[in-house]
Image (cartoon, rainbow, N blue to C red; front, side):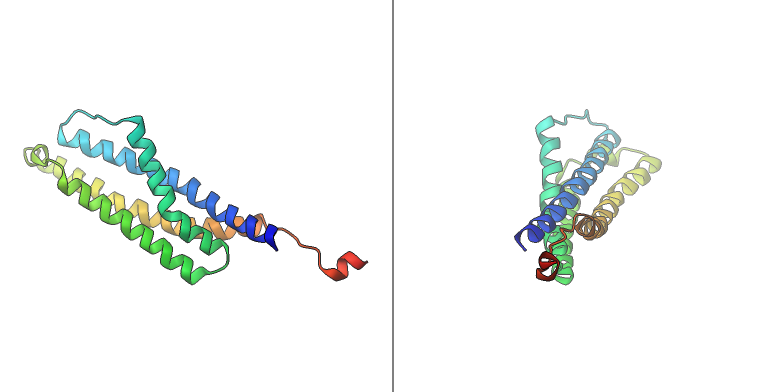
Amino acid sequence: MLRQIGSRVAAGALAAVVLGVLAGGVARVLMRLLVVLSGDAPRFSTTGTLGVLLIFAMVMLPGAIVTALGRRRAGTVLLVLGAALLVFQSVNIPLQEDRTGFMSAGPGALALTLVVLLAFPAVIVAQTVATSQLAVALTRRLAVVVPTAERAAV
């Protein structure tokens, strides 16, 4: 039983980390696009990039593990709460930045900026759905077959 629980926790953790790093990487590229569109010089550090990747993975970790353990409804609630946190931050942080570079841009640059800003929630929703599905798929794939008492007796 402990081996079975361990494999399910590992499946959920693997799903959260893999898709968190992937979604965090896409989000970091979108952040860079916003900086380029604003006309500023990009100043991204390796530490900041690793922080973004870590946050995207860790926020989905509880929901992915709970989903892998078979509590789909509770896992979905945790994944949605994690996604809500990421969406809030992806909207809040750009609003706190200096937007003067965007105001002097033409309508084409403003439209492209809007598309990039709307891509953040799309990436986060895709991450949430994919994390749930991957956690379930990995749980099935990594399932530990525990011999029953009847099989052991034969």
